[in-house]
Length: 86
Image (cartoon, rainbow, N blue to C red):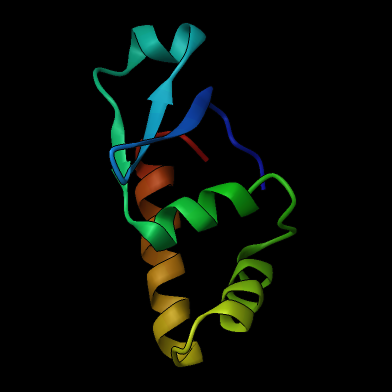
């Protein structure tokens, strides 16, 4: 999936943070805090073909229903799209 903004994922004191870099740092104020699943999805984005690809990969690692994972992934991606990141 195409990431339109420059971010670096950093783990600080047990918290996953998306830190804007380059021009993105000038356009956006602050960092984004991610939960464990959000951080995992973020690392999948460059290689993921589509949303279903992410869902399938998460289902391999987490004990959750497919419907719940679909909802969580859709919500996270919608947030990124709303911020102009995807």
